[in-house]
Length: 245
Image (cartoon, rainbow, N blue to C red; front, side, top):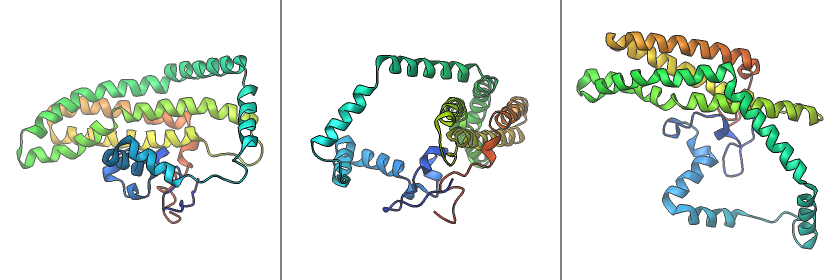
């Protein structure tokens, strides 16, 4: 999946498949989501609304009563049965995702991070050059502890949506959002595993929990590969298309 830069230099969709670590991202200046977050931080919600309103331009054919009538017709076409059917489909997708073996694996992984984070946190807070070595892997583990689980859940939900889209789709296939979410889940899970191993190497007292965590992470990585074989070929906008960004 490649993406042409927006007229303001933003890369469309780049925020959909990132690790949300904006402070370390080389593309933060080209991410619309980051720009909006910064505007909200500086100007507040009203400032962001004002900026958005200034950028709005009515496209041809979107003015006058004709457009309002078309919108009303579209809304009227959606029946209560359609809404109920969509809600049931959504609930079923959530149930499938929540009970999937991959989801169970990453939930376990989230819990296994706790003793590592607590032990490494004490070492990092002790001060001195030795303590500094713990900070980097500790930051990575803290950052990705919950993100892996969130991305896996989104991938599993997206897989159900992709199946529905395939039944209705005509023409060229659309890149799978599920594969994109699975890819960032795989990337962050591998980084968390490596961070845990590093913490185990730094402190013998952390070797056992680090080994348990790394083994669980390896299992989660295998399950991601099995559930989403297409994630390795998925190209994330910007990150995997740097020559075009």
